[in-house]
Length: 315
Length: 278
Image: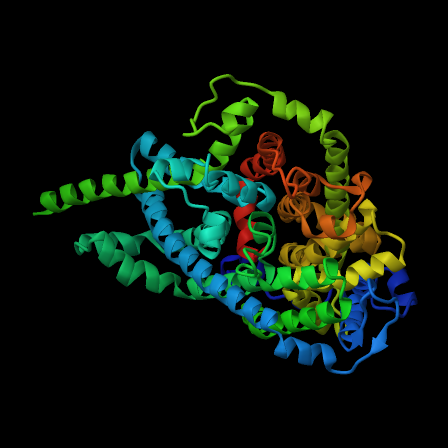
């Protein structure tokens, strides 16, 4: 997610103006603009470890390179791409990733919005020390899933949903192997637990930036909590809501990895083999770098097409 | 009439508080269960039906992390990776953000846009060619390779975070310092950087968390125990035929503790970073 709320940051509203000119002799003597000196280290770093690898990715995607079979790098033209178009595995993976993205983003936005409105009410209206403490406590609780490493969260969920000695099955009185019988919903829930706070905090910040007088006016008019939410809160935060949803969707589609790798490993079969995992496995399990490169190019193009305009709009 | 309204509102409100409390409690369950399980003796973990509280509290799994699973050395690895990533990305990012904010030159706007666009690159896609590059550079199975991978993904965020801070430093202050004879480098170091301190704290927080939780680069670049971070070490307890639940739970708690404490202590800065989009 990138710059969701630039308007709220006072620092950004100030015009940049003309570049700062130092009257020092050094900058005038040397012909190079001083900005170049400051930005050069980062640019070189990006050139070496981002631009070059990406160029190499394009190169590899039209070559056959599978070091397990042969060390030779052979030009094959569009062969990797035509494999990608024909492959059932790739198509399934795209569908699984799409299903994952839609369900998890929907879950996060609906729950996130509901919790954010509830929490905002509490934070605004809480009277007395106990009320305020309670509101603070609730918002603090959500730092935990955010800060928990995805690796740790994934093993915690694996334990929680364990068929024999997991507490969820014990509480429900069933013996379901969640990650085998309902792999995608189980992965969605485990991942949503981790990413929900992000959505929640962003929407909460947006709601808290609505002028309190507007809520007071609504209450004087006798609006119910539901009416207030429907006609005041949601319309006011709609831009933030839209951008948050879009960015979460791009991130869910292109970055889901740790949770799936640890809980299901992409299985059973290929039921949860999301796209990033497919790229990784093609490269590091099957050691087919040509095909992996073609997949990676597709992933990056999807991310740029979906996310590029967003980035531009929000900056 | 208004009294009736406000009483109904009050009842409604306490109902909503209850919902909120229940959700908050439910959110804690996964980690709470992991924490409690990590203190259970081995056979109690496999008890059916499971019980919340350990019948006997034990630290044996935490001991095993260090005696059997090499967590001592891996902790040092993770700390080196995290501090390396924090240091390199903050240094490169702060310099670049200051340059873009204060000394724009021809083409710098395009350059910045391109740098920020790399934020969209799928990590799992980048790791493939980056692995081959590390192989060429003979950096596989080193902590350096992991630091580079994490830093390259983190850099756009750092620049994006810090640039507005440098823009908000009053121009007059910098100009006065320059007239007093301070070189551009010293203006950056002594005037601009301290004024961007809140942004730097946010950047440090997010960079540390990002590096500490990394799995992708760690497991792709490091296959020998000498270069393994904690996240990859934890996965060793999940073998094909046996999962060592006790140490796994203890390791999960151990891995979560530093990032949680940091995020909790610095929650003011957390929201700022989230808004800018990590």
